[in-house]
Amino acid sequence: MPGKSPTVEVSPALIRWARESVGATIDEVAAKLKTPAATILKWEAGEQPPTLRSLEALALFCKRPVAAFFLPAPPPEPCLPHDFRSVPGKQAVPLSRKTRIVIRRAIRLQRLASELLQETGADASPLTQYSTSSNTEDAARAERERLGVTLDQQTGWRNCREAFRAWRSAVERFNIFVFRFPMPPAETRGFSLAAGEPYVIVVSSSDAMPAQIFTLFHEYAHLLLRHGGICLPEEETRTQVLSVESFCNRFAGDFLVPRESLLQHLHACGCPEPAGLTDSEVKAAAWRFKVSKYVLWRRLAETVSIPDHLYWDRVKRWLAEPAPQRKGGKALSPARRSLRQRGRKFSSLVFEAQSRRLITFRDALDYLGVRPQDTSEAEALLRGIASGD
Image 1 (cartoon, rainbow, N blue to C red):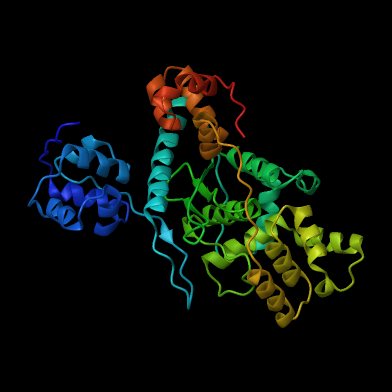
Image 2 (cartoon, rainbow, N blue to C red; image 1 turned 90 degrees about the horizontal axis):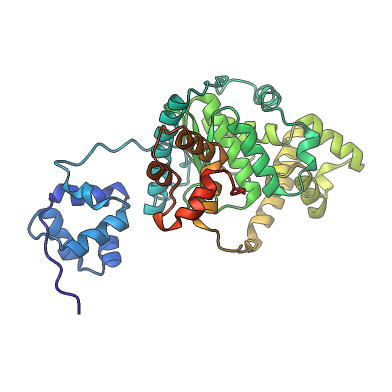
């Protein structure tokens, strides 16, 4: 039987800092560590030291190295991005430990990307700045031209997964890093970091692919405004007060479903009365543009005259339908998961820095989030052998 774990003297302030940094309550920590809440309270009050085993479990729960608990004082925490999720009459769900850890990880990846760009001498790619008073159609048209993706390319993609990969690649060509991490959909669909360069977009991989595409360009609009934040884009919303969120929703819709292209599609399909389109016809149009049916229906409402009651009746009926079950894919290897989460832009930058001996191989493993026991596959990843998505 293993012996009793020794106690360790650590600052109570550091224990409290680690817990609060992930937004966890005393009861949540107690449940995870299978330790009485009263004991956790004693640790934080300095009345009882934790055992080494308990400290290791707490470090794992808070995603902190054990060494962090022996710092002289709690380190400063980076500020969370601005929270845009609250709307009149609807209170935002508190951010969970999982989402807070993703935000912390993204901020770290942004810092690492900044250092790597400087080390490798990569040129900056300036991004046009807009304001909420800017015309979203004009902005969307200009940004589509800048990204260099034609409508023929967009409608030619086989599915939304291929569309997301292509859009992500187009955005990342301008040194904007797009990360994908799982986050509870009820909390957030994505967020953006615009306080410093390089700019970062994080999309929730827990969402459906059409929603991820919409979120990508909703957050891209946040970068155009230089006003990053945590978002829960409401794809079914039709009218909103003039605000950052309404601008970003309108921009994403204008970008993904250009007005003239939608009108051409309606004409080609012989749809004289768009309000009378069947659900199947709306879904077919949505598939053509690689967006959700909510986005397509809203773009129809914005482009042609659809009475409010008809618009909302359909939206409410869709929302009342059971959500489709997402198909579970095969388990990904750590290296392939890293590529999907961090993207080819970040991964190739790490590979370049490591090949030029600007960082060590151990650094590269750390930056890519690959475990040491996966060294052989990590080497394949760093040499560009792994194919990514």
